[in-house]
Length: 101
Image 1 (cartoon, helix red, strand yellow):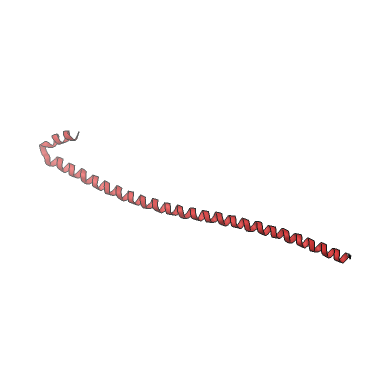
Image 2 (cartoon, rainbow, N blue to C red):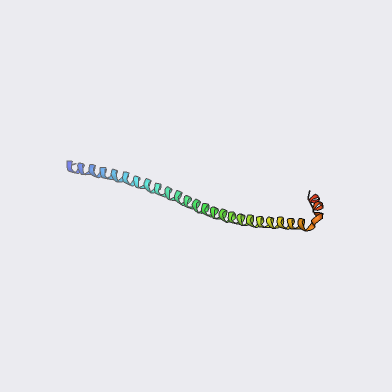
């Protein structure tokens, strides 16, 4: 073969080898991108679930706070009723106090 043809064939082989390496690199990059997209999807789902759990916890906290206020109000009312009952019993207050113990 003529040297120019041999040189051209060698050049074509070099270019083909570079193309093959670049193609392999592209495949690896695509795989890496896919893996990161999958991880991002999982992370986004976890964030959504975490936000939902946080919202539920906040709602539960608000309900517990409202219940606590209501129970304190009710306890105060019962204490006032008890004090009024004791004071209205007059001389029987000692018997009522003994009955409580």
